[in-house]
Every structure is written in structure tokens, then in C-alpha cells.
Length: 155
Image (cartoon, rainbow, N blue to C red):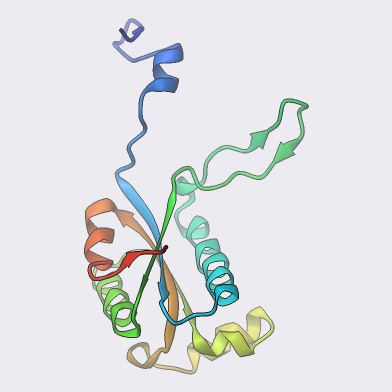
């Protein structure tokens, strides 16, 4: 039985044991023909942008038992998917049509070495011609599910 306060809100151990469900989803979609090091690199880059435009996805700072402080991280899981080049292109178009916060990584970014050149490489190509190898998206669960339709969970 859960303990409740005067307002009927669960308290103490009951709150810690109650499963957390998020009404939003954070997802990364990777092209399925990437090398392992590229998958990791793309995931790290695209996921880094979401907290800057959606600060509500960032949790509280961490601290260990000795009081050593650590940076805050996302407050919810990040799901990683993969799909073909066509799946990624379709997902990108769907994310745009739903105005969901998103980050992209194009194949050109593997040959640049800094942020300025990365941004210039993306800016040089029209939306429909981007050679996408990865993207991150955040939004309501059902909207993100629709964006990712056709993709499969990364193994």
C-alpha cells in the first residue's frame, strides 16, 4: 500500500518504487551501413543538441556517496534505432513536418574537424539533398513513434 500525504500524493518509498512513465521520447536513428566507431560518434554528436533546446529533458546533477559532483544527464532513456538511408530520409521529413526538435549528422561531417566546418557542410546542402547518417529527435511519444515508423531498435 502506498503512503499518501494530505493532498493524496505518494510519498517516501512508494514514490521510489512507482514506475516512471514519460510522455515524451528521446530517440536516435542511425543509418544501418555505418561502421561501429561512426555509430558511436554520430550518436554522441546528435544527442548533444537536444538539451540545449529542450532543457526539461535534463535531470538533476549526480553526486556519489563521497559528495563528488557529476554533470546532470537526460532524465529519461535515449532509445537508439537504425534503418536504411531511405528510412532516415523519411524520418527526417516526418520530424520536420511535425516541427519536432531534431539534430542531424550528414556523411560530410566525417571529413570535417571542427564545429565551424560542420555547420558550413550542413548549410551548403538543401534539406532534401542532405546525406543523412544519423539524427536525434525529441517529442511526444506518439509523434516520435510516427517519425520512426519503419526503423528498428539498434542491436
